[in-house]
Image (cartoon, rainbow, N blue to C red; front, side):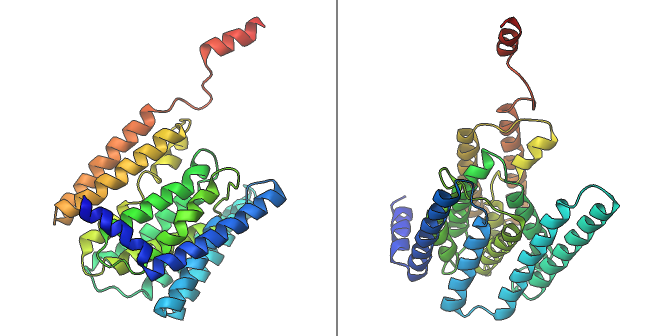
Amino acid sequence: MLDELLTVFDLFTHEGFLYGLGAGVVLLALFFAASLTTKAPVPGWAVAVGGVVMLLLALQFETEQTLLIALAFVGVAGVFVDVAHSSGDGPLGKLMRIVAWAVLGVSIVWFAGITEFSVDPWVPVVFPLVILAIGATLRSARTTPLANLLGPMLAVSVFGIWVTVPETDMVVVLLGVLLPMGLATLPPVRARALAPGAFALAGVMAWLTVAGGDTRALSIVGGWAAIGVLPLLPALSLLGRQPPGGVLIFGLHVAYVVVVTRVVDIWDSIAVALLAIVVLTGLSALALVAGTKPAGAVDARQESGTRIH
């Protein structure tokens, strides 16, 4: 435990982390000022976080320009997705949605194709699917309480990546930015992630996990799994359930990330780790469902009282 605490304290002497932390504080101040001006939720949170992180990485680690360009295309494709989903339910609107998601898929595959992998051959295959899954999850976080909790929950997830992967020089930049910017999705700022930034930020997270776990494939599994219970929450609406309270969501997410990072450290088998992650995900899903009620449910006493008065 003492060694882990010392490792956390070492963050505050890491140049990349400090640059990220400084940039995150500046971004938080800008978003706070924008919220005071507009008196409304501020969009572009994921765009700002992902863009600043890639800029800092390009300056410190001379990141290849093709990677930056590919991620920019992922962001542009996200714009098409949002436009397509606002174009109505007619034949043209449906066609636009199909084309938009196809363009997004191609841009993600392109980004995966120019990313260097030196680990197990399954990683390049799963990599685009992870980006798509994380991006779709972030994009769906538009209603409370998940929209407000997105920043703190992603900060916990990136902390889990940092704990899990052996090479952390680049991951700490994202962690530094997210520590202050994690507060931006909370009131009063209430910053929101839109599709352009959601998929680009997902690409950054998935890529940094691969870069950090390049020498140990199992750590990539743990890093990607550190997304926690976030993908489970949009599924609640499909089940016709109201979202649970924020305390339950955040507490369950923290517990999930802590356990999944410990699982990677205990076992050296990807199969065993995946089995443990599946079991943990199932238990988390049951806990979330148990903490909800059917959408539109009305308290019987309240309904009765309304009829009487």
